[in-house]
Length: 502
Image (cartoon, rainbow, N blue to C red; front, side, top):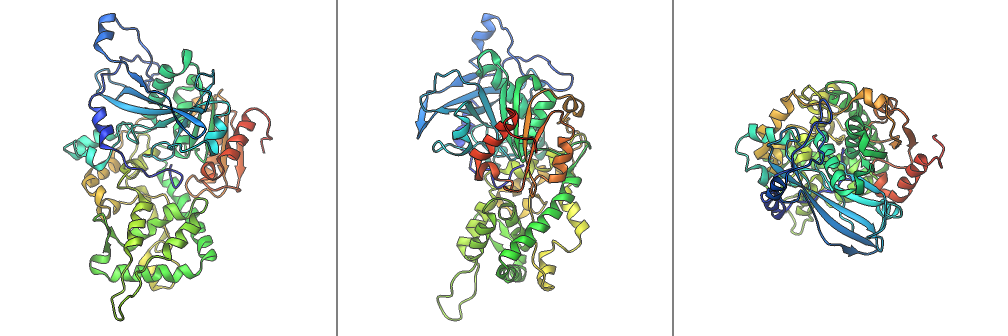
């Protein structure tokens, strides 16, 4: 689950070009009945000579108080097929300056999303600085993001049909992210020892998949706002029913703090609905409509500082009138900022795969759009404006209109509909394995989390044996970003028995 704490960054053509020159992947062997985890395999000298190394490590370089080293791994697109083409997965190793050769345990970070790359360290700060006091940190760009064979509108255009795109995209969920992580552990960690993982939001979902199918690779697990729903073939409807209610509460809190913005948004909705075609053009070629305007809630309502950023953005919604009688217009500044807030054009995986992260053997069928109708006109921006009610912004929901109103997503519209209808998604969790978990787990659960519902997270926690919970309303979903050192230290204290359980 990603969210505001996830960075929105563009992928590079150079990284895609690199992918096409990667060597074939080493053969794999079965380790689980339903899920294949890559392992090292002995090869003949002639076979080995035919293949370049599946792991390439760069030289150390520095940012203030940190040393970094880049790693690239050639992994199969489909871990279940020995003949699968390879893709590149990128990970950045981070240590405190001067500890390059120190014998440190490893910690892998799993980013929120889906579809966003790991943070790019600029200096020693936040949770990374704290973690580097005792760990060698590995920042993974999950497959399809950052430098890990990035999937963008342009790169996906190489697949000539929507069916081909779906057949490719189906390999970019948590199950394969975990298999990539295991491959990296086996090639990177001395003696392939188990490591600790830290999962933020959707990264926490991936961590629970890891606990389900490859617990032997884990020494301990830290989760921040990342306990997924369990127990149904598709949990999306349950998630969105809870999320819409929490989003409603966040809207009410926002308008209580900034009541003047009720009329500001009414004015914008009226302007958009009365414009030709029911909206105005965005700088990239998309369209801002009243429904798209509501998407500002995704970044504005659920993270630390989000209310303030949203309010200050709305201050700049209109162009000034320089000439008496000139037509009122929404400012270019606001339109450009709106696009940057969403970031779907640079990271389309989020929109394409978001609902599928809740699917195991069933389709989502545009769950958020379907569930929104259960709330009547509560989230209808035009009716709310006509009736003088506050316009409720939306949260972490993906709607079919995104693939019409966001220019970069239009070529992926047919693939998005096929993904929403797809039923044969493989399992992501094993509740029996979680019930019998032996890996130490500590989780931060945010009481007012808008993205990962508190009650759903608490129910999931009850199914993971031995988990230690830290329930807090001190932070929102972005706690790891906002106060990473404190959050990381508190969770480590739980693991080490230095903090009370409640």
